[in-house]
Length: 317
Length: 317
Image (cartoon, rainbow over all chains, first blue to last red; front, top):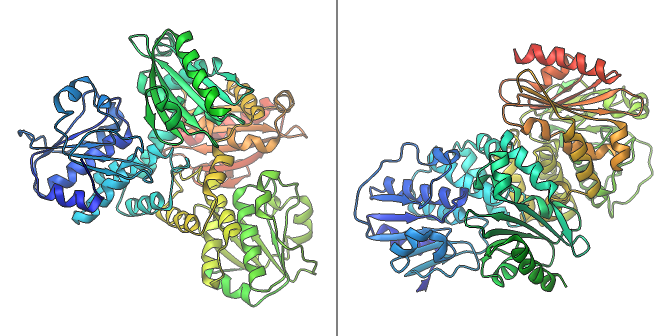
């Protein structure tokens, strides 16, 4: 395994063809935006490339693959984008590809995915920022769909330039993309300024169960399968709820526990101030960033909560 | 009255001294950020300058005036920033200054304030963007407090780079300010990522009274004096609520009606799609931007609502 810079990754990609790009499961704007921007760039270079995601991708992202030529080929070079751990490839892709990854492009400091080459920039707000540098190195034309992909990656991973991972670099790239024609208003509208009635209903249900612990230093929202059924919301609509518990004044650790279909809980951890979310999640078998991380907790809820709060207490004290 | 560009305004300011800067009432991040950045720039140039606001300014903004020298002088040149109409100066300043304004710097297309010189850039996301250009023209050092003032103006007027007024220019300036040391994370945290418990309580109360009209094309939230008392919130905390009604899927016009102490209602109008908020507010005696405008409506609530909905119906049909 060799750690390299983005320009070196750009050169390696230039020397290869028949490139398969893998995203993480429960795909978000950054993994998808990075994957489709890279794929579109490789097509411009005349290479065969495709994106593979084990899960169904929400229709909200369909602008990313609109007009992308579907190419059939035997993969010769495997790239992952925004995938911090083999398990996040999803069971099917993990089994098929985990020992065959050639290039791993990511911004999660906790990244431990095995690959021939690794580009890991933990100061990048989004993996899409690294992909942007690769596209610029190639000198391909950043057309409107590519600009939309990169913009979505950066805006969704920064909470629309709001979270502390946002840097001057994020803003500079955003300015470039808007000048290149990115539909930034539509993207912001879709991902940040529109609440479906279903989501609004889920949010109210979830907020009713917001509980504060340790003198208000920790806030936990639980989203059960029953709430998802009652509101009609899907698991992907929970992503936005994850931002809420940390927003309450005085909260250092905000956690959203989402019950999965097998009764375990997916914990989204967001922190303020001194608490490191990646370390906290790491103690529970997960990982992520300093301010945003995640892990999986065994059910039932009482057990998941007990395990979580035990580690939270250690971290905040 | 002469319309001029920002570079010309910069030159005019260079020729004057003993400069009084006026903000609008119910002051927000843009009017205050513009005023204090300008004031700090003028002080760097060795001029006497001060900011005057008729109302008490929330402590949240105190970083803007921290360390600014208080200077006593007889005003010789009056500048307004982000003030679209004389009435918005507040009763006291309106009476004192409305016929004496030398320079009016603003980005509201509906601006009708009388002044010797007017810089009106309706494509600027915030008046702070225009002030930034003036500071750059002067070549003064944009130090950390100035960067914080300008950043606050832009981020608060764009909903943290989220609303459709955000441009490449906004992002380019933000990148510059972050590189100049702006405390962008703290500012975003304060204005966007922190809900006081009092605000959270007000939000829940107000959302209980969210009502949809015209098949869901119009959403109205009412904040009464009773709700403010029950939650312990202040009027300035209502600003954030204004963003909520427009966020519901399918809503073209989102309105927040805030009851004032004299029983009239301050309407904050936010629109999507084809509806022009400034035109709508204009028909009710107010003004503003294409997507965000405001007006005052006489009480009681039933009357205010009837007047509002009559005009909304005209605009959406």
